[in-house]
Length: 343
Picture (cartoon, rainbow, N blue to C red):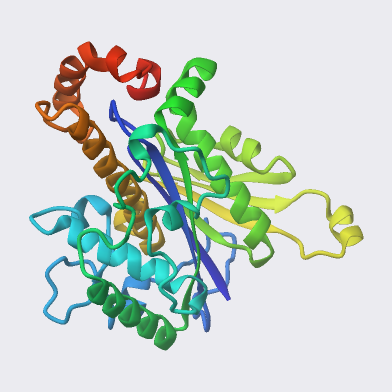
């Protein structure tokens, strides 16, 4: 069995809203890849090809297959929310192979966080808007879930896990002040995901692909923080791909605890969400989380400041929103450090 995982984020750069990083972990049976022979990260299958009867990269598919790709592509166009939600809820229902509609509210989706957080006021369900789906019908979600479940079953692929790591504005700002570096936050979230994969899946020698963080080529420190008990070898470090081999350092300790030896390949790659389905799936999960929370953000402020247009939280529009709401913050009882992310 091959364990093949992907990690990606959404919301690193905006002024408002959460930063979200998601991992998806897939298993592949009857894996026909060549044995790892010292090549960086071994070989991984093309899951788009394996799941082609139920999954596509295209938003407009005449066969009605499920779009799984880089979230920027899936979420584009007039029906972007439709395709994003359809794919994410289909995957959420496939976790563990039971095909159950496990996620029916935003709160259930956020429960995929290992350490659930207390939501800020503008993210709390105030009027029953927590039901999912938001942009498609329940019938459409059920059909997509069943289609993906059949495709997974036929191909010997299983979606073992989806997990969310998230920083809301208050925690984001606190950590920026402590570290003095916004880039450290991406490293921290990635390290949490890598540590969890090592603990839960390390006995199966997983292949983990991470969408490259901040354009850097060197990740030894991040990996050392994530898995301090591992011996880490650099297999490759280039401008587009950095690959590392992690193995359990204390073999005698492994024998004493009577548990399997752990090892893991980790690859940080430019545009990984366009080349690895597990990363694309993580990208979609992160984007979906942010979109759901920003929808609540917009409703909360619209109910209190109806004359101010909402914002998606990015660029010049976020600056416009900030200028317009600043005179109202004291009246609303909002600490600016809980609302606008520090740069």
